[in-house]
Image (cartoon, rainbow, N blue to C red; front, side):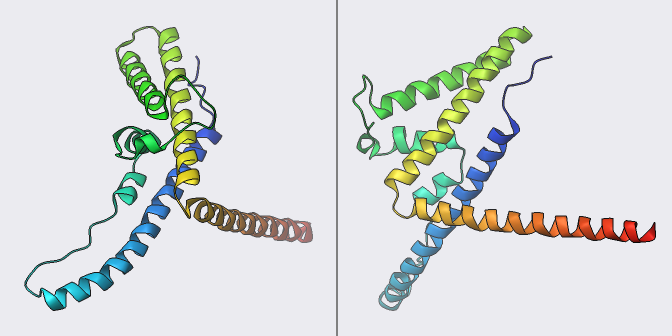
Length: 187
């Protein structure tokens, strides 16, 4: 029986990427909330009877979604979608390319649901998986290239996570060594 072709690392990478996006969304909302609170405090003094609340930033809201939804929001639905461009001339704009890939993704998902033959299901699943990788790369590229502070935030978070992982591995090795030494001492 065939598998989807998606490796564990691709799936784990997408999950980790979603974690970074969520934490960045929280970060930009905290930053925006602090600025907004200052403004709101001033407005509350001049307009005490008007209920004023902080609304999360649209980008922060988008970042909590899937890479496909991030791409759709940034490259297709955004008023600034025309600001995105390829580094080399192409026959289609970024918006047209992403739109075409969204359509292909939706068509492949529909075909996958409706298909009765395993061989064809495998083909559609492979297409869906490949497009999910595409959306992952496209979302990350856009965030790194066009959103000030994202790349540094993501890189710092990754370094912190790598350090924590290294510490966990070192601790596990130490524990295993201690257990081994204890068993050796019993012999």
